[in-house]
Image (cartoon, rainbow, N blue to C red; front, side, top):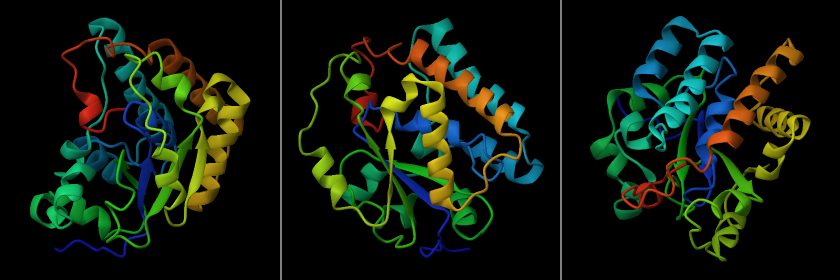
Length: 233
């Protein structure tokens, strides 16, 4: 099986490393047609169709582990696909050279959306012309307390040049209804129906939102953590 570069199920999240993009991917994965960015979990979900409660439990585990270990926990692009946007920045054909069988399978199926991230170059996935793009905005409040990393003033300009895309306002995370609205806007952009039980879906999202707010700085003061150089959450 070869990579299908014409897939329209790839969703690329653009955000500066450390700005919370992977949390958005996890929250969206509550939808039954969106996969978590983990190789084993994605395969299992495609085969068994996780109920929303199971996906929520998996995401909540990441927050619980943060609290227990006082370290940052996230799903990693290179484990999921075999390569990352950083590989593509060095060699645009690195996906063909490094990708795993799951990546090939995902690009050749038409049911599930799957995520990758870009933190610098907005053209890393340019060979996938039908990709969907989510651009985070209003993210500085997340970056500033995370080791107070320097914010690149040109980052938003890079995103402005990206093709067909939808924005995600990270300020919405601070308030339940605003966050649900942003999630539903993104589902509309992907052409996915919203949950048939909006109240239940909203309550699950709110639990994730509150857990993110409780833990989003955890582990980012550890000087040994290098996630900002590797596409961190």
